[in-house]
Image (cartoon, rainbow, N blue to C red; front, side, top):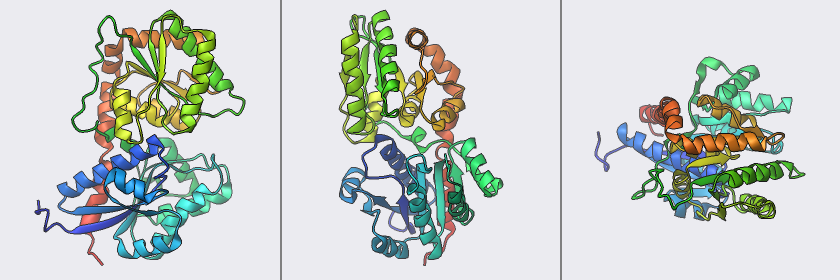
Length: 382
């Protein structure tokens, strides 16, 4: 391997939903940066990332990399002229469930780079849902012109295929967060507690239904568990302040229903995604609505119960041969409590049953960084 001083430098822009302090998306960024650094070193190049961020100063302070405003065309033009390529991803960037403007933004950034002759790389994206047919064309155009294309599930690959993207060019890989390590110097819980300690059930909820019926059902299910088994319900807000507010709604409802001999609390892990990963590692079971709460649990081999609000939840669980315990439309409180107690009583069996799938996802999560580093190494710098 070349010495650090002599390694060729490749400057790469990273585009995604970054700088909004959403733990899942920040974990994606942290995972991508880690993987690019390690794969660049392995292949004898130094990859210098420049992140498009909603809060560049915060992103730079958090990750120690360059960051620039994501909504400034003049800044993007300047950085594209200086860069060797652009990475788009990961996360659910190409979907219109949250509005029609998202897809034009991310495809526009890609098209701008391609117009300037810069290679583009699609990094483990979740594609869809795309309900507006007119958005197929810009997605198809930038995907076909990208040098490397990876998505995080078969359903995303199939959707791109229906849009007209050649499926033999699409690599299906895990979410990058499967490769995220715990913070340096920390250790996950051994999942063995003294007889005095209550087992911890981590809970990741978010607002979804406007009438709040999904959170009401979650509260009822957690109340049945809390009365059946003494546990500590630890709420983990992945996107602040919204998830903390949703958690407080459920906690207030639980207070009214009653907790038996159980306890509850709201965690405050801060903005660092690795600290949230550490929080999840210390749970005995995780009940998750956020996709990255479930990915964190798989990363740390924590038995999980998923509550589905979007196909991406079911798609991830399917890769572990797991079915969601319920949806935002339907959740049986008794069935939830039955499954939670079974996981609390038999965590080792769960880990053994899913070890092979988890190991495979961890290993394959590095694949996009390996491919991108190899392509960057082969390039002649302009």
